[in-house]
Each structure stands twice: as structure tokens, then as C-alpha cells.
Length: 356
Image: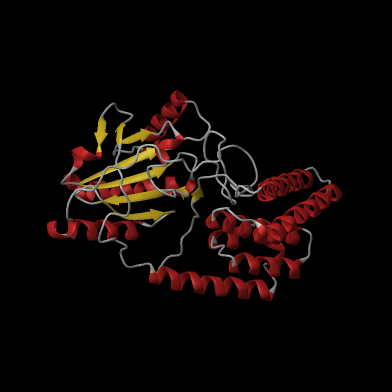
């Protein structure tokens, strides 16, 4: 039972949408500012160390610790913020605190902070094993024990998740009508009678890229019974530039299933609570979303889900679903497109998943 190797590239920057109370709005703004301050300080520390200025690096790390401490102090008092968004902020604040403490040589405190990150739900085990910011901890017995406990926990969770996760009914209303980069128009309504896999991805997203060969294999194995569609969201690019990037990417990877480029944040809102890339939808022959997977999945997991969907009888599949709403609010931060939080690398140069 392999552990998940790559965490999803989360979509929204930390959009701290507080309640209408003025005090809460102000607190949300302060927490957002502290998260950015922590990120900036960690970047400064990294630059200073590369330049050989250890004193400046240590000063920046202390500022990062102070900023994340203020985030953790304020988080319990925030109301009106989506629980998942707030929980992610807490996880990253704890994890980045552990990194800063480790870099300062405060190993015992760093391990304590890392334990709090894991308790808060941090689960990127691959990063725990390789993050150079934690190298000072790797000879510590407590750290080794912490990693082993986390490995066992994730193995148990992976075993519990091995069974195919098909819903007996539509998870939510859904539809698409897109023009692929080769000019073909693809509509879900025209694909009744076929299985459909829709992959929300981006060229900038490492786990998205890692999944592409799996979708190629599925398309080859299932042939005419299956349509795989990749819907690309290219952050910060004008439409024509995004289209050209995806076309180039398709040529380089020899992707044979259709790809389309999403041009508006509203297009993402067709999937309720879309929180991360990749997000994959499994749609039955009646056009119903029967499973939704967030984050990287290995070929075996995707294969099991698709076989379960293929085996569903006409009686189980029922009637056609209602159309998806067209004007849902997009899961974005108002900046014109999603940004990846946590410690996943963005396409441009910069530190590992440090920011919201």
C-alpha cells in the first residue's frame, strides 16, 4: 500500500473571509498579513544563508517564528472563516515553525512543533522525509520515532482508502461544454453511454504531471468506452499564453486524450469546494459524478475506481442528473487566479510551499 508521494497543489490562496463583524474582519486581515510576513521572512533567511550572512538569516528566522506564533494565537478567535481554510493555515504555521526552529538549531522545540503540525493534520510524508530544513533533526531519536509513527498512521489510512470510493448517486450537479485545444467541442451531454474522467490540472502542478501517464494508460485500456478530458488551469497567464503552454506541454508528453484550457475562475466553481489540484471526477454513463479524488492517486487506485464504474449496471446508474449551476462563486482569493498554499513549488523561482 504505497504512501501518497505528492501532496496536492492547493488552489486558493488563504482567503480569510471573516464574518461581518468589524473586529473579526480586522483580525482576519491581521492573520493574513502575518502569514505573508512569515513567508517573506523565510525567503529572506534562505537568501541570507546563500549569501553567507548567518546573522541576518537568524534574525529573519526569528521574525518568521514571531509571525507564525501570532497566527497560531489568533486562529482560535477567528470566526466566519471556512474551517478547512483555517485548519490549513494552522498546519502550515506549525510546520514552518518547526522548519525555522530546526534551522536555528533548537531541535527539541522543532520536534514539538512538528508533532503539533501532524496532530493538526499535516500529512505530506514525502516532504517530511526529504525537507532539507529538517536535516538538523534527522539524527534525533524523537524525530525518527515521530516519522515512524506517522508512516504507520498513513499506511493504515491508505489501507482504509483502498476500496473504491463510488457514491450510489450523483455527488453534485455537473456539466461541461468546452473547446479542446485541437478545436473539438466536447459536451458532457454528448457523451452519455460512455464513462468520463475529468482531470482538473495545471502544467505548474507536479502531482498533476505525475498522474498524466496513468490517464494515458486508462484511455488505452478502456478504448471507446471511456473519454478522458484534461481541464487545465494556468495561473497568471493570458488566455493565448495559457493555450500555447498547454499545447507545448501536450506535444512534449505526447498526450493523446483531449485537453482544454479554462479561462475563467468561474469555470472552477462547477466543482463545489474545489480545494486542490489535481482534482479528478469519475462520471458514469448517465453523466453523474460518482467519485471525486483530490490530490495525486497512483494508477492502481484510479484503475479500481474506473473498473467499479464500468461494472455498474444500468439499474444502478439511474436517470440523468440535473445540469450544473453556471454562476457559482469561484474558489479563488480575488487576485485573478488560484495560488498554491503550503510548501509545493510554484512554477516561478521561490521557496518551497511556504505561503498561502
